[in-house]
Image (tube, rainbow, N blue to C red):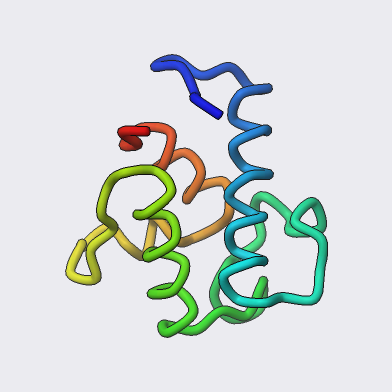
Length: 96
């Protein structure tokens, strides 16, 4: 799926579901991608991911969308805050 330069809400919803699917697949989570709330935290109380999980997610996102998420990026806390924030970052930076 290709998201246009100025994605609509529907485009972002479709991308968010695709990203959720990548997260579920990469981490072998026992839940449906659609069950991941868009605004719940990915770390801690929300989805409960840890730093190793985030590295795995970053790897599959990088491969799928053609750009690199770096461990030393100062903005990682904001990028991985929620599924919505990760999706919006991907929509803005993807090359494929």
